Length: 291
Ligand SMILES: N[C@H](Cc1ccc(I)cc1)C(=O)NO
Ligand SMILES: [Zn+2]
Ligand SMILES: [Zn+2]
Image (cartoon, rainbow, N blue to C red):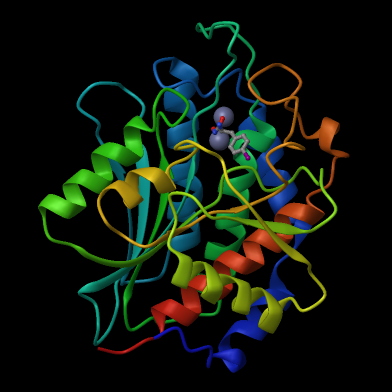
């Protein structure tokens, strides 16, 4: 049941979240030459996220950060887990992908900043993690934040993780994907994608926006293919949602090349803040439900 009843917990978190923090994470990640799944930059990016999330988790006994070793490639996904209290067997997943690509061909030295695609999603999630942990929030369900490896080359990281969770019988009650959150290319603020997602959960996400960010406008669109990691979870039968930055037709033309930079998004992260706040409200509202 998608009840929205944690305003006293959620509202203070949203006011603490800052676009400048999100912007700094985008700058730091996009400074790496590339974050391609087979280069040293791809490993550097994975380690950067691990170190960042580990520092946010310091002092919290029920929070762990791990790197997930993938069978077929060197870039490791990063998973931060906030262990639940009395409903810990039910798991809420929020993710974005850490890898970047230059479709002209990505080698060790090819520049692929990936500021929007998808440093912005990782940065939105990181700011949600920061305020949730700083406030000592304790969920009843378990909450996992995942920085997926190798999305650009066929959703490889999320496919391996989602399959493992299904095989292991993990009860994932909801998944949110943040892929590209900082390019404001369309009239409305947040577009909820309707393919490879769950309609009931999408309605819940729309209600989260109207409850916690009432000035924002919401639209719908569809990709027409498995356009990001939510499709990996959907394929395993889990409920997913993908709030996206624009309509399909107005998507960021600079992605997958040297032009996907923070500067080309106005050197600010105001759009990404909306998605970070949505992630925090999704995590707390779903994470606070008992058995
Ligand atoms: N294909 C996706 C980007 C992408 C996703 C959705 C839409 I609409 C437009 C573009 C990708 O490159 N993800 O990393
Ligand atoms: Zn991409
Ligand atoms: Zn992407």
